[in-house]
Every structure is written in structure tokens, then in C-alpha cells.
Length: 75
Ligand SMILES: [Zn+2]
Image 1: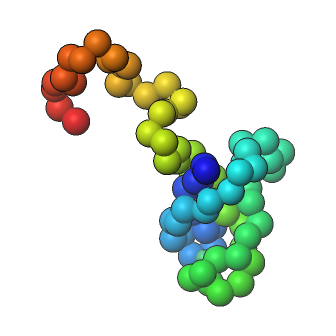
Image 2: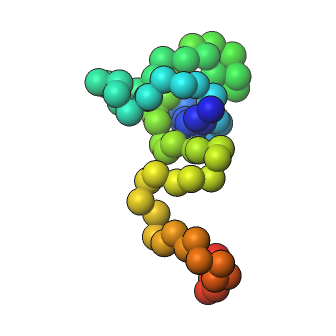
């Protein structure tokens, strides 16, 4: 399951939405969805994708290390 970090453009609160649909495919870049804070449907910015399996596909800085070496350095 993929989660998406959304930000309500009305109240500015951020929250995570669990959905299997790829929100980056939205042409507008915004998602019209119910906001629990506004208690109504509002437009949301899609801030980032949150993968629960921890296998980041966003090309983050951390290199993959599968040779048993502990990852050192600041986290
Ligand atoms: Zn809101």
C-alpha cells in the first residue's frame, strides 16, 4: 500500500492518504478530497509519496547496502 502526503490548500494541514492510485498522474497536480480538518471536500497538494515497505523509489541520498555493512553517518 502506498501513502501520499497531502496538504490541504484551504487550511494548510498535512495528512497521509492511503491509496493505490498513482497521484502523480493527476494532470492538475491537485486532488479534490475530503479534508478532516475543514470537514468538507477541498483541493490538496500532493507533497510526496510515502512507501510503507521502506523501499524508497524516490532516489533519496541513501545508497543501498546489502553486504551486511552497517550504515554509518548522520541519519
Ligand atoms: Zn483542510
